[in-house]
Amino acid sequence: MNRILLQIGLAYRRLLNPEFLVQFHETEVKLVAGRVSNSFLKDCKDIALMNNITNGFLYAVKSEYGGSIVKCSRNIPADSLQQFRNALQFSR
Image 1: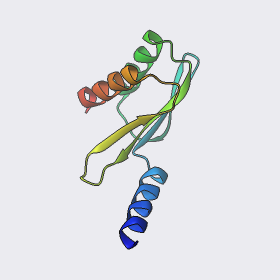
Image 2 (image 1 turned 30 degrees about the vertical axis):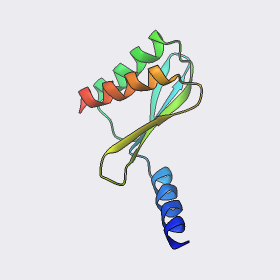
Image 3 (image 1 turned 120 degrees about the horizontal axis):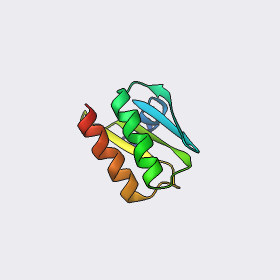
């Protein structure tokens, strides 16, 4: 029981403290929280335009092993999410 509560607490903390949060609205890409490079934001805009993403968000949280987990809203397709992950790796 304690292990389950610990896992729930860790997941809750990760969701409340994202590394970054990027919002897509029509043709605009806006950094809402956190810090990312300008090149990553430009890549996000290019990827969103290529894949016709008009609304949604993209965020990253710390994994329990120290890396980053990149997630997105439901209206962003899985192949686009992979493109965002690749762009993040190249912009670091």
